[in-house]
Picture (cartoon, rainbow, N blue to C red):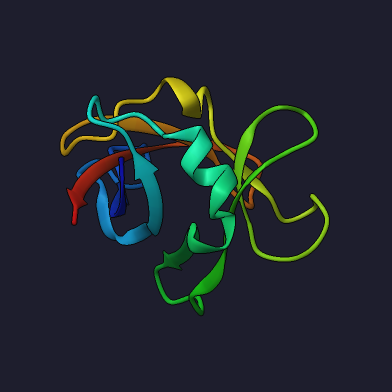
Length: 119
């Protein structure tokens, strides 16, 4: 297991048919040898799992990866759940370049993201 910095960029959508490198997230995640989240490592060092949201001309937001009371994984930028951006089946996702994940954004819509780098 090791902590990695993962960059997600918006994949193809109606608004961005070619995707967008200007919309996405960079976050720190402990992943195991198979490329999945290492939940025990996250539990042991949650404060290390930071996220930076970049979204076009909007100011970047910084927060943390959290596991919610609804048993979902989300990015959270402030106390409470109002600003949380939950993932769809986060624990099942393979974090390798070229893979896709789905995330519900601030607008309430589910957006596809592509894993573009892992460092």
